[in-house]
Length: 175
Length: 248
Image (cartoon, rainbow over all chains, first blue to last red; front, side, top):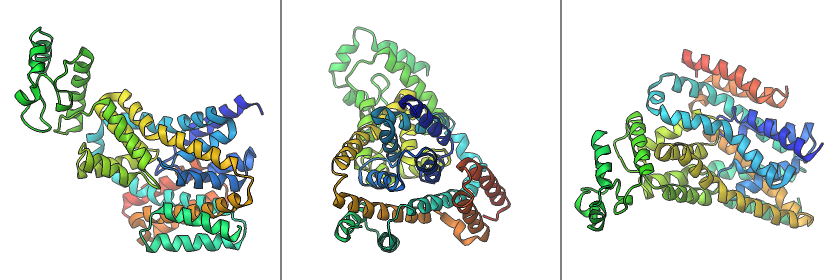
């Protein structure tokens, strides 16, 4: 496939996903995984998970891992295309929403819809986590993830420290 | 509104430079965030406004009436850009707490209640919350241009930093240690995602229907390989019906 075709392909994917990313982009991870790893074969699951981890380490809003996927496929142009496409629908909707903020605040359906969508959003995030565990090399990765999860649940430690610790553990144990 | 236009016209009279020299914020503005009838908010005091600024402020007034917010304070475009740049650069692992600290505590552009309300609206709209918040604040103060400024502010510099980090990573990616470190980081990041999804859940954990719906949407995405849109459409519709009936 030519580079420009890939760009259009990716732009279409993200443009369509941009209408769906309610509650952030993490619930979209299964769909992105299918696109980049399963159907197009552009990267491996390990690379895919690695980019998400890299974006967690760096500052900034966490949609930036999407730009990294784009960068992997088509360099800077790919990164900008992916970021623009995923931001398009939220941007337009947000500008419109700002102008009718008060009316939206008073609408009783807002609460109903939010409450109804919450379980689905969380379910899709679970699905994203499960997809990422396919990249785990062996039982040590599972053990590390289990320990990290326990620490997140029980303490208020900043995630950055834990990700750094994860890197150190990975190097020490040669994962 | 009429007074505003007339005061703008007065500002174009030859006398206005004299007024501008006379520290107008001391003479004409009464409070900290007070709206000065001729020279605008305090951050612009001392400058003679151009027509474009006047039009922007008129539009802002209309927007404010819609948003039902009393404070007529407008941060400049540069301040807008810098505030969201600061949020973007300092936001490690979740931007929302930093947004609260910078917008509410440091700059006092929004108050606590307003911030919480905007966050709920941002959650209902697709997109990451903090980026949506940037678009909201940008639009409110400077229209679509302001939204673009805030968006570039929060995304631009972190993007450059991330691409640099990425190229550093790829320069050393062939080393086995770097690969192992990456595996470790990915495992922890996955655990963090799981933790975030549980934290986000809210009150539906205690309702059986909420759990069923959550498990169903996860299973449809993982095992049945349904597309995201299909899952959202079917399970989301079921969720809305259930929550309307009071089961969620």
